[in-house]
Length: 401
Image (cartoon, rainbow, N blue to C red; front, side, top):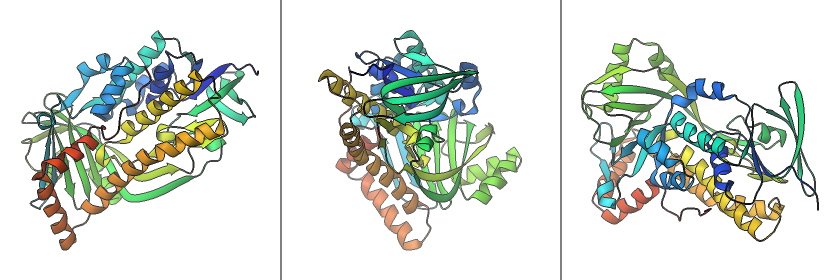
């Protein structure tokens, strides 16, 4: 038998990679995480301030990982979801009470979730190799040799399986020459926070406009996180206008559901595109999270999908190890990738159809979608199915404990 440094070597210590490591921490597998950033760099990164929509199923997975108790006090519950079409009559409302749950989901900052995950990793048995940068991968018949650079030191490690969880600019994906399938939406997301005159009452708003969706998520008592989808030229203009004019334009698009909207935090712009890796698995390597897929933020499904990647992989790896079988077996990894395509495909189709359906003011289409929203609002079984999807409970949750 070949000797390995690790059973599983996870490249990327962010949310997807960190959660996978936590899911495997109680198993017999020897696991290590390679992270290129220092802890100080992570804490200072602007991306940590972004709001994450956590589906109810995601909260339950985080609870199984042992980190939800640290996240929940800082998270804002979503007890209602209000979907509307600006300038039209259609509306649909989802309610946690109607679904018999305390919350449909939650909103938390990425840093609050990261802090809980990283804290649990430091307290557990998983080895952290940080900061270290991946510079090479070479797969053999029964192991992967990984070359790292840690300061001036060069390291070579071996593992039965390497997991690429190193984000949208994945070095793992680049070294394996895995192509990306990119669909440009021709839109830019402006992301910022606002204060609200009225309490949000734990309502998440999804308002569709002719330029694209406008999501307003509860974050704190009278504070909301906003994702405003716009044409690139409009987004560039709005990033530069004075705050008073910006608020007036935002108020016009959103309305007065929360009364007068107050001072705006920093406005960040991100071009929107759908990106999927050409393949999820290679020789003894598998991609998860943003290394594999990046979605339009319209339904807030990006992190939820990446966490399900990690949880499903952990579930399968633990079973495979339990039978004493090779966790890097190509057929096994291909089977995992095939199984994930259903979830990925349905989530992409759902978000993509929302964008296409609600980003047009073509009168017949506008009439049809508003009739659809009203009909949905009057059909409890259909609303229940939509709520189950929004809560991330359309399929059974992974089991790795």
